[in-house]
Every structure is written in structure tokens, then in C-alpha cells.
Image 1 (cartoon, rainbow, N blue to C red):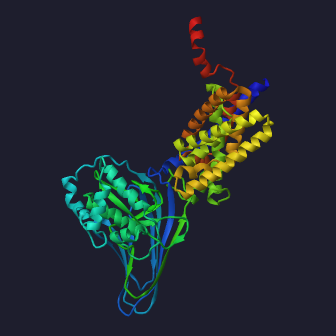
Image 2: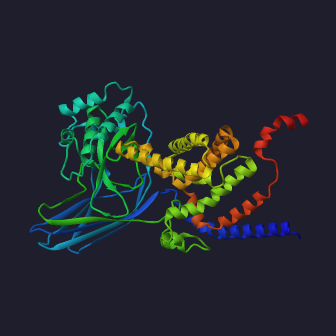
Image 3: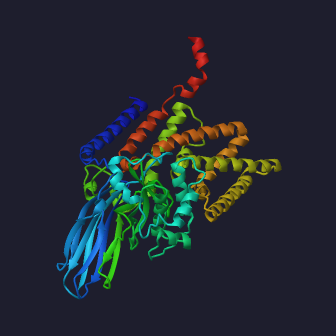
Length: 529
């Protein structure tokens, strides 16, 4: 047998071993498939400490419940034996935990622990809102009425609401005007209760004041709205809760967080606890009381309902231990695993399809940056920067500067522009300018160098054409790399790397006609027939 035959047999054996190894893990993984697919998983522990008074003492707080965007599991309650615990379901399906003790002047502690799995949820706000159906009228009517802290009937609120609803074409624009107005109010960590009118008068508020004002303005214009309470979950201990607003739109409660600029959107790390303008924690007045929320992020595979121990015990070989033990940062591991996938994809586009790109891995690296900036804004920023470098290189060509010093000057100017534009974007709250730094300088350096060299060797027209084809490869890579489950697949099945090697080897031996050439030479091929 010749060397090519030996190589083919060796590659087939390697691929067969990889597929066999993957096969051993398929069944246990399929048995634990989780169609909830959470983006974030945390363990959360409420920790309460208090000293009882000289009479019966009580502590009350709201507990989470599962819904379409959050799953609560593994609840554990640990408290002193002197405490009596009970749960009460209030109106609107809020669940309230109550701890009571008749012991006087005693120190007590409560630990309530659970696992929170969450995913982001966004809504498309229609231009025109439907009337509330008859089956919801009785339930919704209270969300149109003023309250002590949500003064929707007050003249100040009504005047402002009328002004915000002028010169608009539809309901969506009204809600957007209200949202933008409340969002523009300066934020401040005010711990005292701030009602809707006070928020207007002092032009400064925390999440509570902003949410009450948003609800008041919405109710004043006839849109059912309510306050929603919970916790923004982060990998840290914290003492702060959070409040946002919800508007009843076409049979759905749609979230609006005017503090953090989330319009009709709730991030994956928002833990929902209760509906209504309430306090998360209440207790007997005058007692010594302290609390904290201990929060730890849990490494997980989004499509599997398995804990770390079960993932580590999967048959065969996986990279989960690296994730679980934090040997390699998750972001770095994702990059390492996705690079070969992206490289194989670009190699296919170059060798089989016939695209001409600036290198093999450059489109993949650009695609990674687009995951941070967003596709449309990222492409616009990247092309703008590259074209900018191309334009400023032109005068240096006229001066007859050598290639390397000219490139150094161009890149220095580019770095300066990025830093100045980013600073300007932060100072003036221009979001797209702040995304410039998501393009690592090394990526821009490589791209600029390739583009500049191409303009010198082939002219601007061919260089721009090659840039366009690079962006096509980048776009396809972005579609593949943005699949949220792909890194988890590679972590569980690292044998895929062997399949990539085998596929790339077979790809490297391809000597057939490329697809682009089939289109290019179609008239000639048809004339021969």
C-alpha cells in the first residue's frame, strides 16, 4: 500500500474511534436532556439574623416560584428550632415565607437556599395595543387605579403623561416616550421610599422610584401597569433587591426596566420574586436585624439537567473538569474549542466554495468580536475602521514611505481614534462608540495589514472585493459560532477535534473545481454541451 492509502486508513480509524467514543456518552446525555435550556444557573441563599423582641416576633419575605423564564429547584430551609415556619400564597400568586417566634430576647437565624435557573426573555411591542378582554377585566382593573405611592391620578402625573403622549402615532410610541423620560432621570442609590411624584420633583431616583413613576404615567394614560420585584443575580454576596415595571399588553405582562435600559426585555439573571408595590422583607419593628444574599454561579450545560458530579462521571473523556475546577476561564476555553470549527468552515469556503479571504483564522476572530458588539453594528464598525486606515494610508503612499513604517503610523492613528471615540462615547452615552474596544487591536492589526498589502499589490478595487468576501466568510462563521449550545457540545465531546483533523485532511486533498468557478464558467460549460 502507498502512503496515501495508509493515510486514508489511519484517518478512517481515527474518525471511527472518535465516533465510537462519542456514542458511549450519547445515551446518558439524551436521558438528561433539559428543554428549559437556562442561560444562567445560580445557587442563592437568603441569610437572616435577628434578635426577638419582648413580644411575638415575625419575619416575612417573598419566595420565588417557577415560570416560563425561571426555574426554582432544590429548595432547602434551615432555621432555629424556636422558629415556626409557614408559607402563605397571597393575591397574584405571590408566595410569602413567614417565620415567627414567641421566645423573648433571643438570637435567631434563618437560611433559605434554592437553585435559580434563568433565561432572558424579550417581547416585540406592537404598534397598537388590543383592548383588555372580558376574562381579564376584573383582574386588571386594580392596575389602572392610583395608590399612595403610584399617584396616577395626580395633576402633576396627568400633565406629564399628556405631554409625553402628544404627537405620537401609536401605543408603542407612547410607552417608548414614557420609558425614555424615566430612563433619562439620573439614577441614585436612594434607600428611602421614593414615590412617583417625588421622583419627578427631585429628578433623581433608584429603581423603586423609577418603576413607580413609569407605572404611574402608564396608568394615567389607561395602560394597566404594575411594579415587579426581585433580585439581579450576580456571582457575589449582596444586600440589594431590584424593582422594575410591567405593562399589560395584548394578554401579556411585558417588562420594562428604566434603570438599566431594558425595553420589553428581562435578562437571564433577573430573579422574579413578587408582583406589586411591596417590600421584599418585612419584620417586627424595632428588632435588631441583618441579612445578606449569598449568590454563587453554577457552571452548567444549558441543554442538560445534570450537576457537576454527574457530568464528571460521564463515560469516556470530556473537558468538563477544566470548567468545573476553573483551570481555564470559560471564555478562553470557548475560543480554543471554537477556533478549529471556524477554521474548518473557512477552509471549506476557500477550498470548495472558492472565496478569497484575508487569511484562514481572521474571519473567525472577527466573528468572535461580533458576538460582543452585535452583528450589524460590529460589521459597520469593522468596515469603517478598515476603510479609514485605507484612506489615511493613501497620503503616505504619495510620500514614498516604506511599507513597515507606514503601517506603524496607520495603526498608531487607528489606536488613537479608537481610544478617543470610546472616551467620547462613554462621556456622551453613545452606545455604539463604546463597542470599538471589543475589537482586539491584534485583530485590527492583522486585518489592516492584509488590507493595506492587498491595496499595494492588487489595487483598491480588488482589495475591497477581497474584504467583501472576507466579510461573507465572517458572517457565516458568526452564524455558526453564535450557536449557544456549540461550546457545550465541544466540552462534552472533545473527540470532535479528531473528526475536524480528519475532515481537514480530506479537504486538503480536494483538487476539484470550486463552486465559484462553476458559476463563473457556466456559459463556457453550457456551450461545450
